[in-house]
Length: 311
Image (tube, rainbow, N blue to C red; front, side, top):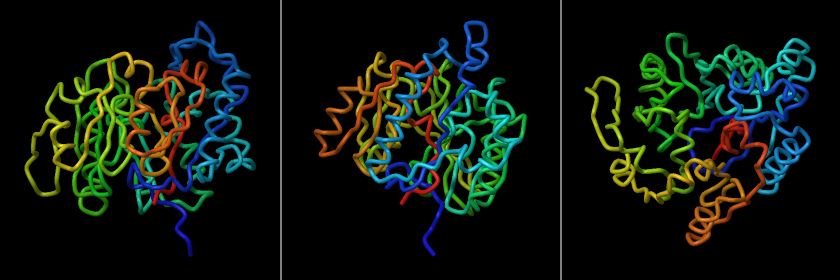
């Protein structure tokens, strides 16, 4: 039987992804509620949807199967009613991480997202993906703060929406059986997730904003061993990665926030021309999508994709 789930790498072939095309819930983002929902302003809904559709079309054109949340839950009236009042469900990345043996449920820090993980759990049940565990308060962590350095090395950023108790819970749940290392990367205050600062685009290429990746020492946790302290850019180099450095302006405009579909093939915002040129120089391919409205959710394409299967 063909494997349906397992996404324990960053730069492999993205075979299947879970996304949510929003609907009426976007109208709940108003000048008085935008901060609550984590938006920088209300959006033009038709344009937002056009840009979202451009993202799903780009992924599909590269061979990725896009599974839409409301299709999975189309017979679940309770879940659909809940989603209709939660504009942040569009950012499926933050709700869960799919490993090779099942799904790890996140614990949402932002008040505008609390409670949302049960929807992804319900979808996982319908898709036949087992649940490995769920991070519990006072531990808080969101999927945008997590990425794989390799299949057995997991990066978790200590950022505005992640707490150390969550990382310790992940160590208890994952070390040994699922991964060999959990690398805690403290990043600058004011940064929501590491996927705005670092992205793996191939087996030897990462892009990132170096000043915030080396601001503090990172901690490597291994089962039964004392923590090891490293500087992340140097550790990336030790693991065979060249780091293409973005500027502060590029970081602030989500030029790091790509979806890697296969090695050196990615989808990102169409204004990230310098990073796109670097990928082309390496022999890769980029599809740039418009994002003037998507960006108002303070997110990028990576944030809107929850990988289910990567090979």
